[in-house]
Amino acid sequence: MSAARLRFAAAAAPMALALAAGAMALAPSAAVAAEGPMAQPVKTKQGMVKGTAAEVAGVTVFKGIPFAAPPIGNLRFMPAQPPKPWDGVLDGSKWGNTCIQPPAPNRPIGVNQATDMPDSPPMSEDCLNLNVWTPAKSSGAKLPVMVWFYGGAYAEGGGSMPFANGSKLASKGVIVVSMNYRVGPFGFLSQPELTAQSPHDASGNQALSDAIAALEWVKANIAAFGGDPNNVTIFGQSAGAVVSAALVGSPVAKGLFDNAISQSGAWAGLTAAKMVTREQAEAQTAAAMDKAGLKSLADLQALPADQVAAKLGRAQGIIVDGWIVPEDLSITFAEGRQNKVDVLVGSNGGEGASFAFGAGPKVTVDSWKAGAVQRWRDLAQLGLMAYPATTDAQAAEFSTRPFTDGIAWFMHHFATEQAKIGKDAYLYQFVHNPPAAEGKPSGGPTHASELAYVFNNLDKPREVPDPSSPEVASKSAPDIKLADQMATYWTNFAKTGNPNGPGLPKWPQVTKMGEGEAFLLDVNPHTGEAMTEPQVELYEAIFNRDIAAPLGIERVK
Image (cartoon, rainbow, N blue to C red; front, side):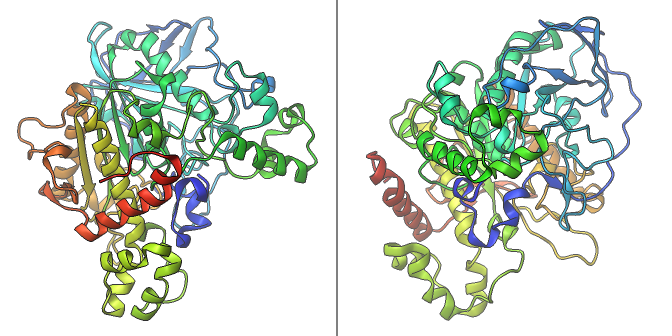
């Protein structure tokens, strides 16, 4: 995801932009040799598919099912097209191709989990496939469905990443679907000829069209796997959280899902911002094409796949394309025209520290105060009231907080906007400190560190930039307990739109909590302070200045 879209802190660039979907270079655990109960093969609208036993006994997994036509040739950069039928029985025991993206086998803080694991599938433009984990014995079980969108800065990721193995979530009585969406310029590119060819006069959100096509496939086919097409929850983290939230705001996605979860990201990115327009994105593409000597869309579609990103640069991110995203979604949400779905949203307590990397000069009290105007412009005094450093140690601690709190505020805003239209909304902050390996520094509740707990996969390689230890966490009783609780909260929400259930600490709706409060996910989950009152005031003022006023929408508070 580009710096403008994700609003990463300056300390995050440029490395952080390509990190949110990698993993520590650890081998995945061995599968349990157990036969799943699903009758084989399963008949979809496009053909038959045969799955295989998943890691958890009683769960069957079907891998690599095409949900859209291959976006190759003259379909490159086009919205997802309907899937093609196949003859015979599709082998669902192997991952389908992952989308074109940069591998990172030697990245110091973790490899690209979509491309560099022992069982990573090959890369190809023909990558629009999905995976289904089901505990159902047959069709007709009508189990709730959870559809996962990966993070990865819009630059990397795939449905095969080990941390998102859906076996353990599925064992709690839901069907889990992970899908591939196009990343980099393949998935996020606006261009005048593309726009002119579109019946919607739109281009640029190809990845969102992939997500919508996957949800349409789920509507048409998931009953055959024992799922309920009328009880679908979408969920995603980082860039995937932005995808999830954007679909909540999209009229094109209306009716395709019933609940939504966004982990560390909402419709405009990780923190609140004005969305990029199609015209701005088209101008960016035109400049890149001119620099590369490319004259037309045909030239772009004729490029070898491995040259596309080199010629066009990073993904442009989700934009206001006039179709899937018809307007800046801050307007949509402010005016209550988003999809009426229940939401569970939140962020982590150490997001900002995730991307600091120790770079830059040491922060002191003097430098912290001197940088206030550059940091907050006319809101500098509010900023210093929110982060009143009096020692160098405090200043160093505060230096990463604006990114953390900017995400936390945006997630609270997302929740309250859903509550305003009468939907249930649940807000969390993951504050647990996952254990590190012996002798290694603890990263705290970093960006992505909740994922091992959400999927109840403590033994799996971590998604970058989470530095915690699978070996230590998977043997820690408190971590095992928290992972089971979080997986239960998430699957309860998918079942009923309410995360609460027997044996779990009570999670109140956002309307029952104070402005700076969230449900704190730790070894003993409870409601508590996530932001101070001055911090809430600061981010409200930033939103009103940078978004509400320019867009002509109602100011918050």
